[in-house]
Length: 210
Image 1: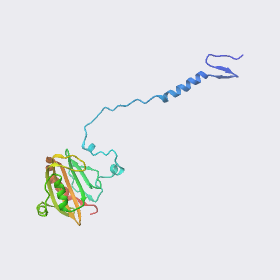
Image 2: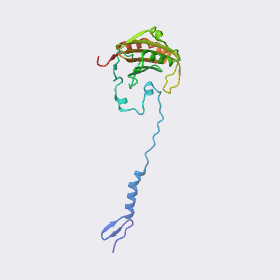
Image 3: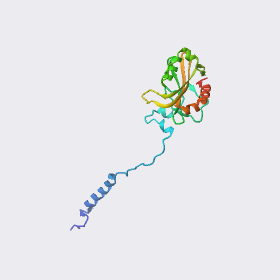
Image 4: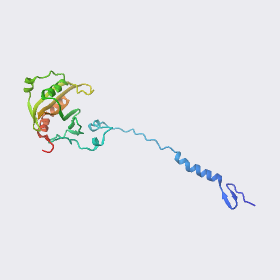
């Protein structure tokens, strides 16, 4: 006569536990249904200049290329200047102070055209050739040109809003039909404090391979 037990049944010498097997299966499945605990981040820190230059969709070149891998090599760079990633429009790029900006680039057009473009960003009247010749002469990497100064409300273009109480100090130079520019803009007081440093920067800037 077969023996009956509370949790299983003996049939032909083998004991089966249908209720126990189902319970084990459910127990094994339950952990997989648990959701991971939610994590809430409520800490913050002040934004720094490094954060302002952050590119969320940066390419590998943006992330891993050293600043300034273009045709120019910087010589003396002030400690207060923070190097930024270079691009086809900004061969060398720096930030300083609360909003100061320095960019080295190669532009199309001529000396007078580029000087007047900078002056126009401050709402100033354009110069003629005689007015251009009166500007302070300057030189960078063998290219000769003129130093340009402007102050007031700055309209940088490219969809950016005008900025009040700004200043510009920079060099537009030409050599062999190529226009080289070194442009510094920012709050007027900060630009004034960096004028001498920009001149040293221009004097020590050289072309790669020289």
